[in-house]
Length: 156
Length: 372
Image 1 (tube, rainbow over the protein chains, first blue to last red):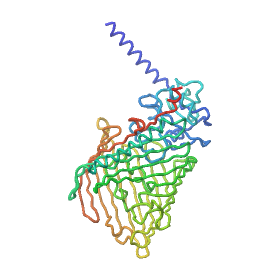
Image 2 (cartoon, each protein chain N blue to C red; image 1 turned 180 degrees about the horizontal axis):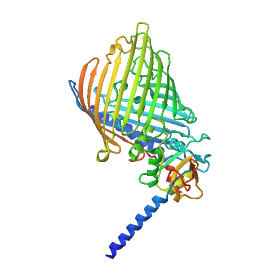
Image 3 (tube, rainbow over the protein chains, first blue to last red; image 1 turned 90 degrees about the horizontal axis):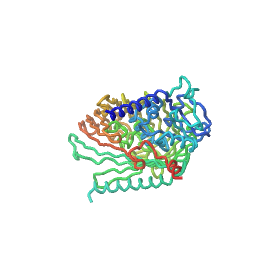
Image 4 (cartoon, one colour; image 1 turned 45 degrees about the vertical axis):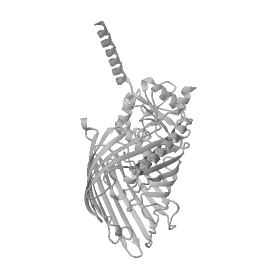
């Protein structure tokens, strides 16, 4: 009985924690510190993530870092920015490479820490991270003039 | 060794060679250094056709392509195919090979051998049978088509128009060789270059709209024929989505020689719809196509290319990287009459350099950083 109670309590805690994360966490769009951009419109963000725009205004190459499947922030980005499901996303990039529209696929990252490490290391890089996990040294972009902690931010 | 074994062995050698190259390169990649992305497409078909021989299983085309990013702006794209043939000699061919320099999103210049960016299908799917919903290609753009120049050897300038969702391509190259369904790989046979201009509009969004036009001009000297002026115009509208997927493409050609003049027109429309719920791996489709060639057309009139056809089928995405397609066709050919047929196709794609996730590349920089 005691064992059952412990399992129930732990399960409830995990569930509540996950609920809390889901409610509180916005997804922040972050870039390499040297990227000379501080705000993007939703349209520009889409064009960058779809690789229809592959260069920053200073003509440096954009390097896209994408979180591996199953992460909540990836699901949000696929839904809100790409407007695709996993299957469509996969086909989109295979087609993009097949048509030689991009010289390389996005780089995959397996954790928020890895995303932060790479986005500060690779010039021109851009990625997305839960705003609750952002290090203060990371450059966060506003989207349509709004930062992740402001009301009306689109990637909640 | 029989032809299939020989084909398989040679295809395996191509794939293994490319895989080794890719793996080696990936291991040597430094930050933003050379990066190789490889895709392998393949297919196995089964067909039953009325009044035809050679039915049964068919080893479809194997395709190996790799895209090498040499530096921030310079890349090389190569695509090779292996096609089994009846004469027991597999055909290996370089389908695409070009070098591209990206100045910006607005200006990308390249030179080499391409899929001619005429219309939609020829660029969007070409050898990627896994990518296309149907088993078959439209008759107008089928492999070895005489109707359009499927390949193009020359130079291409392309890019976005400003920061808009419009794009353009301008090409200058050899055009058709004296064998009209092949490009001039080793020079322009009549020293008269082909020109092409294409434009498209592709806004991001759930609608998946992609529409565009293309215009192509060449002067051709077919074997045993007088010189012919060719003008091709194409326009298309596609909804690149799953429910529904729509492709409508129109091609018009004018051919004029000193003796006569003729016109060619072709149109096809394809609709597919991804089912929902428990049937969401299935995507039924239908396509209707018509190709009319004037009897007087100096380039194509004598070839009996008139065609009407309807194909219908279902694509079953039983795996993220493999599909099984079932297709029935009713086709009427200008030179051989009508025919019904049934096709099955097992098509797949994989990326040997990143395991089972061909849509994501490795991040070698992270491994370098972590190993310090």
